[in-house]
Image (cartoon, rainbow, N blue to C red; front, top):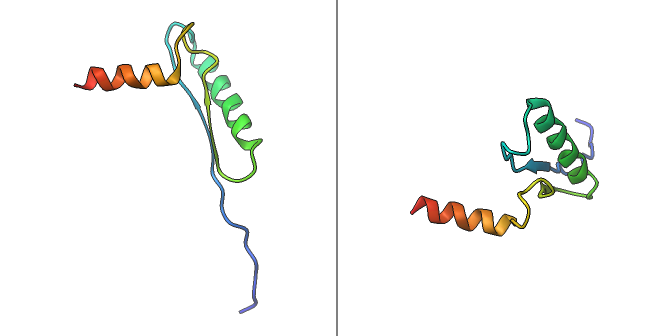
Amino acid sequence: GAMAFHALVTLSIGAVLVDPTHFHQYQEVARAASEAKHMAKRVDGSSLFIDQRRMPFGRTLAAEEEEQQLAAL
């Protein structure tokens, strides 16, 4: 067969933390997920973009993860 060059596969993931108090319709979640995906694709190579703009005021991703770990105990 003929030699061919294929670029390495990359993966871009956009994630949204869904808080029912911030989203009232599924279209809002879909729009936020689409925006997060587009942000992830702006980075060369593989990337993960987590949209934290819609988190409750004063909360951070680290605080959310800690709370989930404590709840699992």
